[in-house]
Length: 264
Image 1 (cartoon, rainbow, N blue to C red):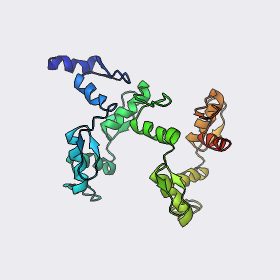
Image 2: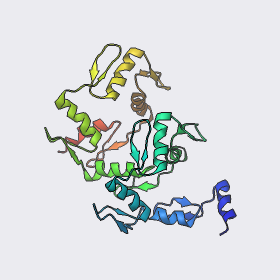
Image 3: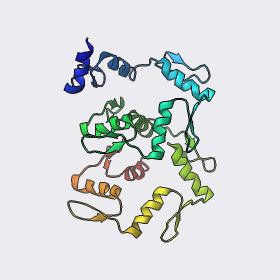
Image 4: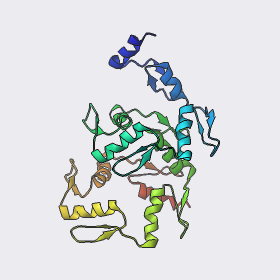
């Protein structure tokens, strides 16, 4: 097919090549072929140091640089190093706050084109990553992986060396460890109350600022958008957290967690 015809699809939005597994569509067959590797075990290129496998040779090359520490490009501000110039370019936007990629729907701006692409799925409703166990679909592969670990396999690879509590994320384990160390590195600038994590401190600070988020149905006010989201489920009847044993549904995940103890 001529280059002009391929180019015209960027204007028409035509995507004649569809994945027969998840139905995601593409404008070129080559893009479909690359996508199809997500669903297949085509890991032809293996690292001889750690056995990690990749579908493409360039993926293996990038991975190997992590072992050789071949990071030739250094950030002039924080001295972090990178194996590729484009990685450094993206990293520099952390310091410059540059966000050159803008959503045409809501005008939200992003530092990376890939982040914008993921964001656009909020508007299109596209969910290409399907859980083969419960058929729930997700906009991002990482969300699917986290779903499988938390809902189906129960995998929690990070364990506390003090009390053996297991966590799904390393960040959760880091926060948990502060229970044992007593470290509270974040303080409220108004009342000097100390907190173990930044999120808890910011949530507390809103008590001083008087910032409120209001339900547009009953006008009840809350100190965070998250609480409004939970509250709105009382109006909509949405109960997104389901018990895998008795199918009872809950508004909040913590309620499901408490309920699951009745089965154990």
